[in-house]
Structure formats: C-alpha cells, structure tokens
Image (cartoon, rainbow, N blue to C red; front, side, top):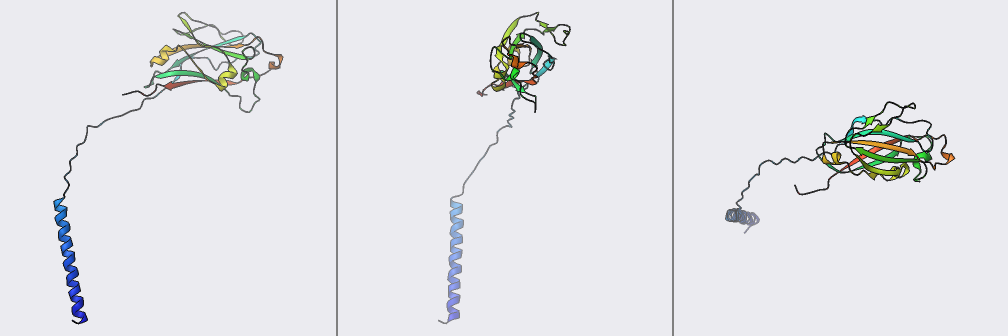
Length: 217
C-alpha cells in the first residue's frame, strides 16, 4: 500500500470515528434530557423606615446669657418632635458639643465636677411651656400648666460632652408622631472657683434618636 492510499484510509477511519462519536453524543443527549419548570411569585415591596427628630415651635436653646455668676440658672424651652418619622425611636439621648472652634476651651463647660461649672437638667411638661416676658438680661423663665416629669437629673455639662445621657419619660416622642415639651435648665454651680471668672462657653445641644431593635415582620 503506497503512502497516498494509507493516508486516504486513515482519513476514512478518522471521519468514521467522528461520525460515530457525534451520533453517540446525540443519542445520550436525547436519552438524558433534563425537564425543568419554574414559577414566579407576586411582586414583593420592601421599604425601610426612617428615624426623624427635629425641633418644634419652641426652640430657645440658641438664646445665651451674659455675665453669669455662681448660683445663676438659665432656662430655655425646646419642643422635640418626630412628626414625619416612619420608624419609632426607642431611646433619645442628649449630648453637648463645644462649638467655640479655635477659641480656648472653657472650664465652665468642660469640668465634670458636680459642684463647679455648668450643670444641665431637663424637665418635660405635658403641655407647652409658658414663657415669661424677657428678663432684663434677655433671658426667660417658664411655667408648666400641666404635669412635669424629670427627663434628666442635674448632670455636669462636661460629662455630657463625653458621654450623652438618655432622656427618660419622653412618652410622646417615643410613641411616634408626638411632641415633647422640654425645659433645659443650666445652673452655674455655687462652688465654681474664681478661675472660672471672665470665661466664655459656646456649646451646642445634640439630641439623638435610636430606632427600635430588629423584630419579626
């Protein structure tokens, strides 16, 4: 058998093998075909809630006081609301930040002593606080014609600058869609030393709400 005849024979064998393999592939493919089925559920909509906290009609916290002396008290009313919230808060805290920027920190607000510097107390009224006419120095006093509840006992402002405190008894706010009528009272402690003379404190009050924990829905 010459070379040409041998090559032709090999080609025929190779073609025959390929045809056979192709036929076997089709045979097994047909023999082991997979049947499938699927079904699609109705559309499900999932929407996350939103915790919102804001100030209402009363917001006197921005009104300062000048030339205070040991024993002075500074009262400022503020309404806390969440009327647009879709997620109810379980806790509300109050913190204080030093907003003096590049100025020197004042020991009036940074001290954590309960007998010196500024002390913070928060009281809630079941109705809106009634504000008096402005005092000679531009400040105010307030009265509550409803029921008062302590939301925060006297706490050094310096403590609130490092560790915000939970406000208790804010039933309207925590129930959702309500307004809590709060009175923030600052007291310049009678034990404040002479090193606190002629100082200036510039602070901001930060109310923070925390949403409820996860639950089956």
